[in-house]
Image (cartoon, rainbow, N blue to C red; front, side, top):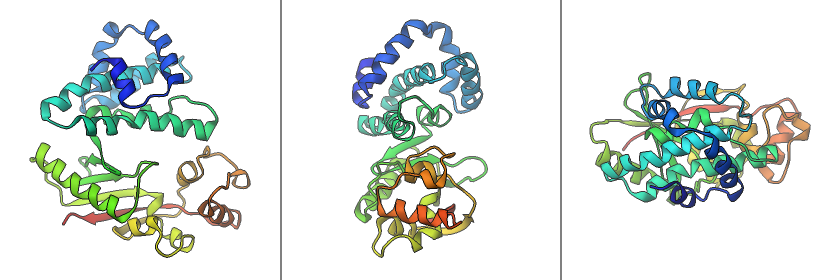
Length: 270
């Protein structure tokens, strides 16, 4: 896949494409090749990311990191084709880059790449977006599991989630038949029991939460600030933006000394 086709396929913002052109003029991909290949290897991806981050240390907006990871995303398309995974799943998965850049703009007022510590999972074929949700292979600490991630643009309606779960089961059975799992796991603020006090009956979030057996509640977690309010973690509670009823109720809770937190849940595979 050519770089231009990839950028179009994932709807990369024109502003970012222009900035990447300048980065491309300065980055020697031949010299970077061993590091990029290591970044595309699950055994070495973490070390390679840290080394690449060190090499690109002067790049405050991380456009160099974005350029290198998108180069890896371009290359990994061949692996998708070799396994027979559809171009649609590839595109939906790699649109994480575009989505994260837009989330950064909403949160900070400008676009830069702040998710390089996460997206090497997508370019390693560890995470796939299948319908509304993302699915990640479990690690050595939790074998026999697939982690469920909830993109910010996910449709959490019952029908959409049902379809995603059903398609995911077929996906892993077809393309990774040797990977046996019996449960989905999810660690998210959307599973926090506190939300039950803030959301109305019939809420899509609560319907999603009710699918899971809550195994651990993390009362002190404040990760939800970035996702619910699209604001930096360090934002003072009184300065958090309010546009929805959930944001308003959450901020009222916080100003009264409360916290939403997060939770870890388990969904058995049927």
